Structures are given as structure tokens and as C-alpha cells.
Length: 259
Image (cartoon, rainbow, N blue to C red):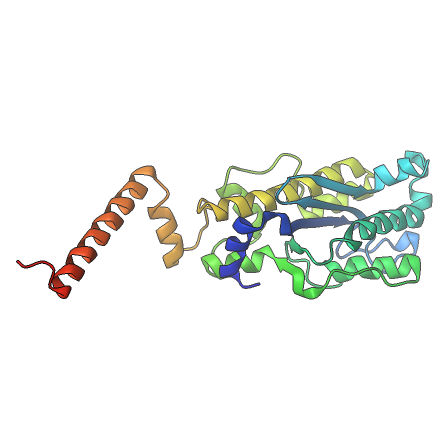
């Protein structure tokens, strides 16, 4: 789906879209002590855009479901992570034809491929993967709409600062890794939920033409110009006058009116 088609599709069919984000032990420091060569998945969160309903698959909740105490979580990481991924892909199975909006989940380091890889490692089988064609990177979509310079790095936190401030519970990637080391799994999951909620908020702002960005392209300028009620009223009056002038000119051309 092209960037210029995305917002129209969201307006017309909001039920088609699911927003996904996840957290892992660390992007760059796999859990070597537990024998993992790739970072463990600690939480996967999915939000249905239209309803706002959010489902979460996380270490602390799955451990509780399995009857594993907090003190014994580390000894059962494989079992708990397997449960996280099994329940996530059970959720995915009947929704694979929907659109899955994400933030830079593009490869095996951080992305759908990473989730699939960990599933294969733990289950020795292939998951019901989400087709590449329905994975929509919101970062790329915003670049297509607002230009490459729409926000400075790190873009997600920049957009938070521009559009109301840091979301409560939000942790940067490095802070999430530290939370994992401290076994603060609830805090990690809360951060992942906060990010999914903010991605949904970004889509809603962009859909209404209210998203604030740093870029100075033509579209950004137009959005700023039309952000106030006065500017929108002026634009409406100008449009009405333009239509009226067009009608008069058409009548003159057709010979219905004479000056």
C-alpha cells in the first residue's frame, strides 16, 4: 500500500488495521547465560485500530498462567517465551489478511523475522507468518507523506515531543534492556503498550491533518497553514469564491451571460 493510499484506507476501513510492537531482552546483547544466540522475546502487543482493543502477550502474564513464580521465571525462560509466541501466533492465524502497522520491524535483528525465528527455535516448526505484503512500516509511510526530513532521529521520541510529550510508561530500547536485566517485566510490557498506543495516536493525527512534524516540505507548510480555525475558514471562503468565479466564467464562455 502506497503512502498516499494509507490514510484514505484508514478512514474508509479502520477495521482492516492492526498495530504491533514488541520488546526483547536486548537488540545487541543476546541472553548468553541462558544459551540464546538471538534476543528473547519478552512481550508482544497488538492493538486493533478501529476498536482500540489491545492484547498483550508478556513474560509476567504468561508465567502466571503457567504457574511459575517470579523467582523462578529465569529458570523457565524457554517455556514462557514459547507460550508468548504460541499465543501470539494463535491470535495472528485468523488475521493474516489484515494490515499490520509497525515501526521499523524490518529484519531478523528487530522485526517479524525475529519473532518467526524465535518461534522456530523454540517450537522446531514454522509459525503462521504474516505476509510481507500486509506489513506496513509507519515510519516509511510518514516519510512518503511528509518528506524524508519529517522528524529527526530518534523519530518516535521526536514525534512524541512534537505532539504532546513523552507517553507515560515509555522506555527507550536501552532502558527496556536494563528493565529486562532487573526482571522488571511489567515495566517492559507497559512501555510496549505505550508505544502501540502512540502509533495509533500518530495515525489518528495524520488522518485529521493534525500531525506536527519538523520537515519543511510543501505538505508540511500546508498543514501548518491550515492548522488554525481561521486559516481553514479563509480556505473555505476562497474555495467558494473560486467555484463562483468558475461558474460565471463558464456561463460567459457558453454565451448565457453578457457583460
